[in-house]
Length: 629
Image 1 (cartoon, rainbow, N blue to C red):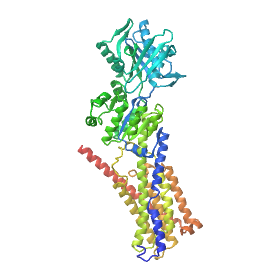
Image 2: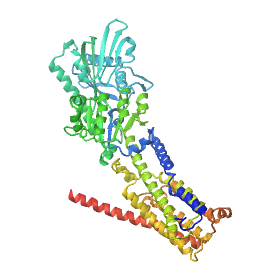
Image 3: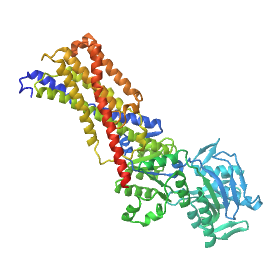
Image 4: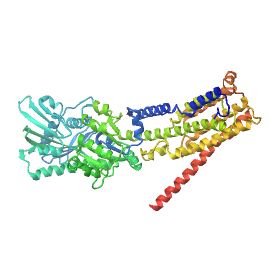
C-alpha cells in the first residue's frame, strides 16, 4: 500500500519492520513461561512441589482426585486406642502418638489371665515389626510405630532382643500381611508370627488362643472375630489382626488392635470445596470396608449404596462394566496398585483429568499413567517421587486443593495478559494500516513503535500474570480442555478495547495535525496517547468480569510498580533532550497531560460498562436456568 501511494521504499521498509515487531506478540512465550514458573514458586511456598510447567496448566483442568486415606486425608498419627484379645478381653488405651505417656486400661477389670493375653498379643505384634522409636521419633511405618508405642505403655520394652529373626515375608499390598520366623534365644523354640488384614490373617489360622491353650477355630468363632473387627472398623479404626504358631500353616489367632488415625484439620472443608466446584473426590485405600466408609464420611466424601467398591469386586468386572460404575464410585477399599492403575485408565476413558496419589514403589505405574501423579514428600518412596508430577511436601490433602486453585488462577492470568497483548498488537497494526489506507502520514515513527513494543509487551504484561488468586476462582469448575484459549469472548473483549484505543489515538493525531504537516508535537501527543491508553487497558485486563474498584487498585503491587515505571519511561522520552532527539518528541504542557488522561481513561470506562453488562447477562441466564430447573 505504501509503494502504491508513492512512499519511498526505505521509509516503507522501516515502518514495515517496526510494525512486524510490534504487531507480533513475540514476548508472549516468555511471559507465559515466566508466569508458569512464578506459579510453581507460589505452589512450592504452599508445600506443593511441581516438577514440570505443563503440570501447572493441567492442575486447573483436574476433574477427579483419587486420594489415599492414610497420611493424606488423615494425620498419619497412628495410635492404638482399643485392644481385643481372642479370649474376649477388651482394653482402652490412653495417650496420643508415639509417646509412651498413657496406659492400657481393662474394661472388665484387671485379671492375670487378661493381662497375660494382652501381653502375648502385644509382644507378638512388636516382634513382627521393623520400625523403632528413638527419643519419641519414629523410624519406620506409622502402623508399626503405633504397635511399639502401645506395647511400651503396657511395660513391654525391647522384646525383640529376646528373639532372633530367621526369616521374613514382608508386607505386600496384594497379600496384606507380614510374617516372620523367630527363635527364642533362651528356650530355642522356633515360631511364626503374622500380622495384617483381619480376613487374611484369620484365613491362615487353624486355632484361636484361650487361657487353657489353643482351640480349633470353628466357623462360628471365625464369624465372631470378623464381626468384632467390623465393629471396630465402623468406629473409623484401622484393625490389625495378630496370630502366632509353631509353623506357617498352624497359626493361633491372638486378637485385634484398633488403630486410630483422625482426619486432618481442614480436609473436610477442602473436600467440600472441590465437590462444589465439580471436582470428584475418590478415596483409594487398602483398609477394610467399614474403616474406609467411616473415614470417607468424616472427611465429607459422599457415600451412598453402590458407591463403595472393593478390590475383589473390581477383579470380577470386565472393562465395559467397570467403565460404567467407576464414575459413580467414591470409595475403593482393599485395593492394590494394579487396581489403582485400572481406576485411572477407566476414568481417563471417560475423558476425566485424573490426579492420583501414591507413596509406594508399586504405585509408580499408576502415578505415571495419571494426568497428575501426586507423591508424598514425607512418607513416599524415592521411586514414587521420581515418577510423580507433583510432590506434597506435607502429605496433606489440603495442599492438593491449593495447587488446583493456583492452576486455575494461572490460566486465568494467562488469559488476561493474552487479551492485553493481543489488543495492543491489533492497535499497532491498525493504526499504521488505517493511516496508510486513508492516505494519512504515519502517526508513529519506527522508534516510537519499537519503544511501545518494549515497554508494553514487557513488565505490564508479565505483572498481569502475577495477579493474586481471586477468591471466586476457587469455586470455578475445572477448565474445559476442549475449549481454546482464544475464545469468542476474549476476541470480543480485545476488539472492543482496540476499537476504543484506535479511535481515540487517531482522533488525537488528526486533531493535532490540523495544518496537514506532521510535527514533533503531533507524534508526541499520539505516542503519549497510545502509551496511556495501554496503561489503562492493562488495568482493565486484570479481570474479565470484576470491576477495578472491586479488585482494588493496589492489590497487585507488581503491576502498580510496572505501570509507574512505564510512566517514568514516557516522561523521560518526552522531556529528556537526548531521548527527544532519538524518538523525535518534544515536551508537553500540564493541560496536554490532563486532556490525554481524561481521553485515555475511556478504555477503562468502556471496559467497566462491558463487565457490568456481562454480569447482568450472566445473572439473567442463571435465573432462567434456575426457573427452568
